[in-house]
Length: 289
Image 1 (cartoon, helix red, strand yellow):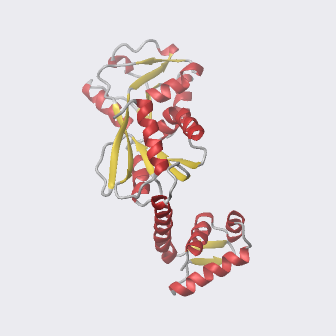
Image 2 (tube, rainbow, N blue to C red):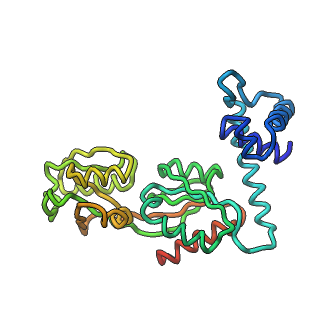
Image 3 (tube, one colour):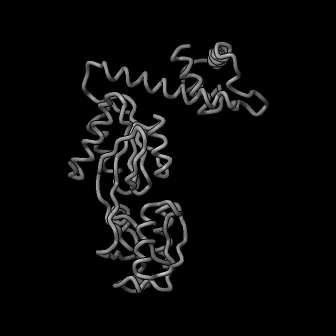
């Protein structure tokens, strides 16, 4: 079993096509087919179902894919650990919740790319639980999420504290107290979002029962507010991103809980210069210790 075989298998599993995988791997499809069949003979089981609709991974293939991914990641880590150069380079896979990916990270990603052009940075978004699962299983090198939880094998570092701001179209009139929300629809991310939880707790403290419309997109939430359809709670990063092009006003309340955003990485991963440089840049930008 060779790393090149595992790399071919993972590429086919991710894409679902031998022809497209061959293009990415810069080889002919027959070579990919032969190497996968050789791997299946060695393992004594089929890794893919082959039918007229193409390839579909088998249950055994799903299990093997997890191990193959971990082996390939460990190979990269081993190479980094003994590399004589200290300059960050190679792949860096970062995950972030949408509020970070859309609001805080874009200028920092541009700065990081200018500082470390040899790093191939990939950014993916998802829910906080999905992102932490991906870090635990080495599918991500690190992730920024807005929850502070214990996860086996993970360590976390505070990156920044996010203020929360209520936004409403000018036609709604000023929001001076929580009671001014009475009768207004609220747009918020679905249950499980830490910002939504902060809003629900704030409403509860003020004994308000409001209809909350779940929308899993800040762009859509801002669009609804701009159209005068209701009110929303957004993190400051999103507020600053959209405020110059929106027909709404922002309102801050002292008793709205700030939300910590933390960077999670694997506690036992080998040295990763690209990740370490990324964390250092974020800490310098947000002035965290």
